[in-house]
Amino acid sequence: MTTPLKVPRRTRERILELSLRLFNEFGEPNISTTVIADELHISPGNLYYHFRNKDDIVNSIFAQFEGELSHMLAVPVGRRPNIEDVWQYLHWMFELVWRYRFFYRDLSDLLSRNRTLELQFKRIMAHKIKIAGALCQGMRSDSALAADDLEIDALATNMVVVATYWLSYEYVCNPRNYSEPQAMADALARGCYQVLSLIKPYLRGEAQLLFERLAEAHREKLK
Image (cartoon, rainbow, N blue to C red; front, side):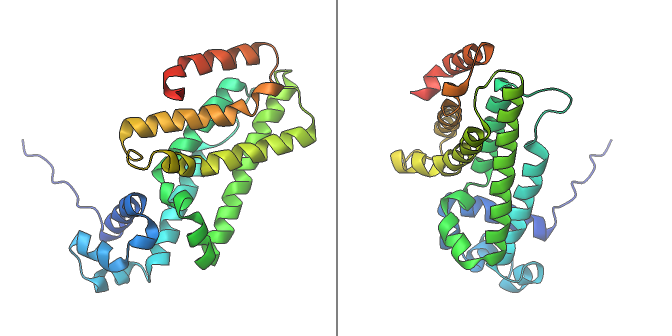
């Protein structure tokens, strides 16, 4: 029985995949379209056939990121959210941030010269804050969280701010091991805990106890 031939990936997909890896590893400002073409062993003209310029590549990667975000980050359907949902939401968010980490590491530079990305990223941030607020409101309605509307608004914003810049903080603290798999996993766990700790003073009853159990289960990674 013959093995079916593997369909080669299209050049456009290969460009996006490689660009994401290079941007994440070396920083978007340090990677040119010439470098991308050389790494793929294609001509610059072939690359420009698929993408007008580097910003076009960045915007296409961001479209992928936004698509994943809209599918992954949502409030539970048919029931009220609990602290485990918030913990899971944070893990998903941090994993997504890690996969597309160059957006966050090079954020100021990217937004200063890419108007399209500036508008899109504002929408992403607003979506994250909306989901975080909805999770907190759902917990409040179940008497698991004691906070008024203004406090929940502040909590949701602060959660997203810390999550957005957490990997930059980790990079400053440990730049040499930043990309190692175990170091990354530990950094994500610490980030989840730091964001969730913002909610801890407002937790009540079983939610407070569950937070302690979740923290204890990840204690080694939190050091």
